[in-house]
Image (cartoon, rainbow, N blue to C red):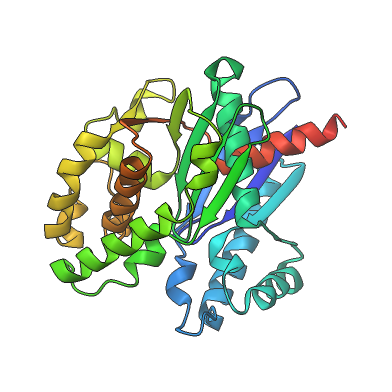
Length: 308
């Protein structure tokens, strides 16, 4: 069965086409994405501007045409933090539905965490034991733990790399602003940690997201060209050395680092600060990277429903 997933994120809208069958791993067949950065179309009151809505509708239509050309049998569209938190999120979804015919499902933060956890569990298997999964996007941070496919604890915090970057001013930001942001990040995370720590000690601790992959790459992990099965990790000691360097760089200077694209260079600092805080507060020596995340979780859950 050929499935297509349209992932409307805070930074990127991504169409992923896969060949998926029950009992088999989804095989990527085609990928098409564009960095719309919906969060940057959001005003101080939380409304996504009409120009952002127009850009989203135009790209969704483009994805629909590509999906047809690629022989997609079913299209699964979903949106995360950018639309979930927007004051006019329902209006944006209605505009997409009216102008493209596509009904985008807006995932609650905890569902986003659960689907990511499902993908990670399927990637590593039951022998991995209790998993702790760390996932950061443009709008939110997800922390999830469990021993089964349905996690024991799934939380979503408003600590996305893009969201926090918009609170900073200056390139690079002033040291005082970064100090205040560091304090805020750590207090926001610490306030929510009790359910995670009470759930039990994890056997494996996994990181999944573009931001974490970028951080691992700049700290020496293998490039994506070496394939998905190469073991990649992000060590806390390496990240601690990297964060002060990032804080003194401009966005342009950061874009020259391995694994950092020009479009994400501005927000990689805030993302690094969040992941460093998570690793410190949960005493994580290293994150093992997983190539699967929420998009794969959506596909796997759909295949499970076919069997029910």
